[in-house]
Length: 307
Ligand code: COA
Ligand code: MG
Image (cartoon, rainbow, N blue to C red; front, side, top):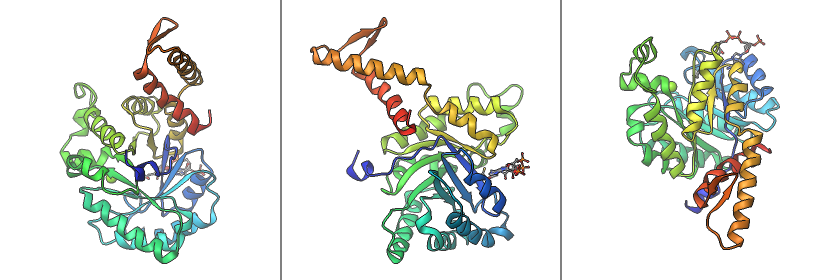
């Protein structure tokens, strides 16, 4: 990992709440929610005739509401629209000091990331902002999935890659009905893209995040999607409704028992190493340096959460 990657801010993203930027009411509700991260949307959650007005509503919400410790993000429209550049200019000039990241949807190539990197740099200089605004990208086009390694390496501003399964299905021609219908696709339809995205993210020191689950009155199915994404290395999942926040916070946090066990094994291993041993048994299980790397992920998560 290069030094610029190590300087990336570490943020919790267990639950990333999507909020229509056209709705003052929902933005106020989001500010008071338990989500780690909130993104105020200018893209799909906002109708074309409401997009321009939503920019100033977002600026006001960012400036006036108390967001606590949340990561404050704005999702702009995609680079193929006439909206994208003014989304960035209006929101960052209006509320740059009250904003942590910009999310770019439908990223296809590394150039898309460079565009937002350069534009943000210009606005930051003009405003004299001392804190770098981060970038989050949605991988939801087949081109983006093909170019994912170059995209992940494109800018030190990048903080996370998000798998957007809705648009991705459309882009690849996946028939969601057949994939999830009574017979279902053999295995998990999202296994490959989640796995691929988690590899690219981890290799570049970024967070891997799982996208939306629309059936918000089905907590069991949502929880299962969280569990699958978490198992493959994703740090969190989107919530499109407040009901999805708590399940994601729970699934993407290690249990207290897991944290206690990880710390116990790490301590046992440190003692073993001091005795000159490379492997040790704890409660009948072998612990070596590879086990410690796995456990360290649990310990790192626990420290970020404050467990
Ligand atoms: N953020 C903040 N508050 C939300 C919310 C969200 N994403 N979704 C719902 N709420 C609020 C509602 O305003 C309502 O508030 P109230 O109790 O004060 O009236 C409460 O949570 C319960 O909402 P509910 O009545 O169950 O749902 P709804 O019919 O109002 O909204 C949706 C359903 C799907 C329209 C709404 O959840 C939504 O717009 N989600 C985000 C969609 C989005 O961002 N899509 C793009 C990314 S995939
Ligand atoms: Mg999308």
